[in-house]
Image (cartoon, rainbow, N blue to C red; front, side, top):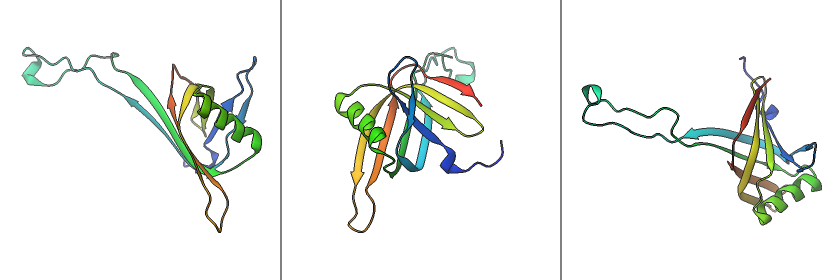
Length: 138
């Protein structure tokens, strides 16, 4: 994969419809997508040369997304506010250019508004995966 423009990484929120329609969230300027997993240590007295052993496929996988930027429109802002205050887990899509799309339920863990007196209102948010995610290569 060659170098990519960071501004092309997008996050979209679903409307819950059938079929579901996704709307780009805010005018994000900085974004981060992280994948994590826990491990299950099964090391015991019989482990070869006392090396740690991990149980394959037994850990918990998680993804998180954070971003900050400016407001895009009232509709996407309302979707975020509603999901946060109702603590729902709408479907989101995170599109990584020339890589793929990660999709599934996320919960909004934080939603922050910033309003400097000499600038635009800014938005920051973080999402935590709340179920199975899918990956579709581009």
